[in-house]
Image (spheres, protein in one colour):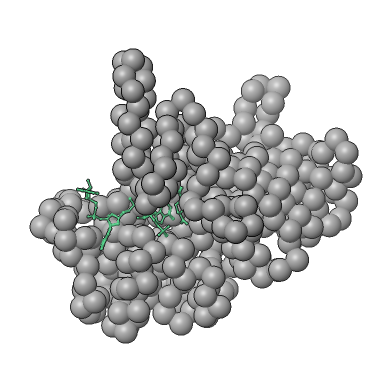
Length: 346
Ligand code: 25A
Ligand code: L14
């Protein structure tokens, strides 16, 4: 075997819902690691995680944690990234950041490898990983954008609780048990942990993800608007979103309506999607086959189905897009960017 280059990799937020998936992917994909550093808050320091049969001790993330690190994968919330990512860059690491901290920074590429890997190659130390709902949508729309152009997108999401971290997963499971046992459901985390008002998620649908902005849309909804434009490199794409939390643990589902710039043939749309990297078409309504969050869980791909023409608009197209929010929506997109950077160097 040719002697392969290996890298020092740090995971910041290693105990979180996303961080744990990063570690699993680095192991499963046999990422060329020289040394793995697992960083979290002081609370978790000293705990151990098994990686490739070896115990790795969790350390508290500090500005000096990044000496000698080649790739620093961040998923510990925006404030941690704002504080520590510049130190990682100072130590010479390439930061791939899962939070919203740097996504709209003009000096930071916002990358989905299937769409704009070229932007990643021009990084200045930090590469941002988009919001999970945006990633799966643009990955599926990319071949249609290239072939027909897109005038506008109207999307409604049905988002899993794991997007809000491990505490939100625990909240859904605890509330579900309590409601079934005839007890009162305790609401502490959703829709937004740091805000004073909380709503029941078990047996419910909450039309709020992240805080509200001044225009009546939530921040999560505005992430879908702004990030889609940045990733396509096209400010003219009109995007409107409604983001809803539902009692699903893993996998975001999206009802997406697109108005293309040119007339289209539905068979060509299907063929384009079938050939798109990272996209799997599941679309056989006569056999009741369409993408489901339960089927997407644990998979790296973006699943697309329910393809149909709008009844009124000649260039309108409807689709249903599902992916594992912790994988393509977060950990996999991050590890994939690192893999592609290594390939581009080789
Ligand atoms: O700001 P943003 O961008 O909007 O991101 C907000 C949140 O979104 C998640 C992520 O949550 C983040 O906190 N997220 C980010 N990107 C995402 C994406 N693309 C995304 N979700 C989906 N898609 P998370 O739960 O995945 O990750 C939280 C991790 O952050 C670590 N962390 C927190 N503060 C840190 C820090 N790491 C370093 N330095 C800091 N200052 C956190 O580690 C976790 O790994 P931890 O060790 O502090 O906590 C996990 C352990 O601690 C226990 N625990 C948790 N809360 C409490 C607690 N114990 C006692 N009291 C508590 N209040 C847990 O049981 C666990 O063992
Ligand atoms: O912006 O609560 O990366 O589902 C996306 C998922 C923030 C949290 C982001 C959730 C996150 C969000």
